[in-house]
Length: 100
Image (cartoon, rainbow, N blue to C red; front, side, top):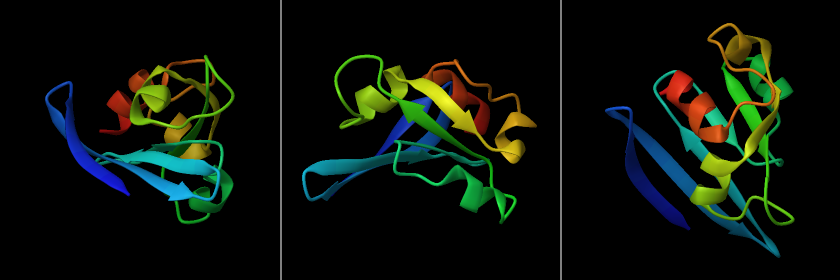
């Protein structure tokens, strides 16, 4: 498992990459919410009122690294994330900046 802290627009964000068989579960958690790979269920997190967005890769078959996550494109954002400005089509980095 990879766990590290990065700075995004001057705010600390925890990022994780967890090996799960042939893929990695990749996600980043800011103060206000989470941005993750396609395995993240943003609808379930909405049930808790927790802002979350799911990112798809812009290069390659899947999100496998933190760089893939930040460089990916938001495919889905739950209502709580949308209320904070996260929108489909924005970059993972931009979405995470809003949730940091």
